Length: 403
Image (cartoon, rainbow, N blue to C red):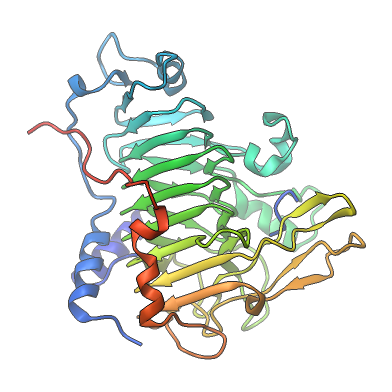
């Protein structure tokens, strides 16, 4: 993490920002780009002095009335969820696995580098956490399955040792775990109107699972490698840093290592994963041209005539005015295998069958070619927050701080 922060600082000085189950799953205006990258570069450097009198519950710290755990503070919330319930999590590391089922919750930390929620779980050992026995969402460190939830100024991390297992898989070690997906944050099917400000999400495969409806991430940082932002939700990422992390496997020269997104947007939904004025960067060890922007995930689903990849999951991902470092491959996007009607993984879903677009990408990873479809100026008008979110205005702003 220290090396990443140093990279961010260097890039900021240069005027840049350091921006189934699941299948084993031209330039921007200079002033606009500079302003965007300046905003993004400060995402995780805020030291927040909060006013505890503005909160209904405090977790950690020296106060004798403070809750010892975040779960205890959540359990103490009034049953009437029409009342907003505000929780402050003091600086510290909290080894907890949380499920937020109450609506109208604010959870605020004292800065993403100071307030950290973490848990070590992966899909293979997490099926018991869910009634549907699905280990991938079951592995989430924090799961939200309600509406009007706001997270700010903290880190959520899945600490499962993906890299060690990746190396075991590469050498066919019998001790390797097959289902190594490990989610940091799950926005489950009943989630809607979730706003996330200046939050860091850390993981490897499947860091953020957007399985619900609308969500908004502002000035946040998300890191991972395989399909680490994925799902069916309508989610906007604005002025955020998306960090690709290395693999510990064996790749042929020129082979793609990982994929940033894996949307499974239903064709009836106009919007999927939308990135506005973000930055795509990488950790040390991620080679040039080794990462694509995403691939189409068609979840294996039960239908009256069998179990196979959902043909209506026509994933949508759009990158608008996004700075892309040189780890992004020129081809832009990748294909993804799905379950055919005969039960094999022989159905290959291609980017051309999907809804993948860019607009004014910049940086060494940007390119315009037939494999990277571009929005027109007229189409861009459809990507305002008002059109994407309709009647919802997401919560944006600083934490409740002392003057």
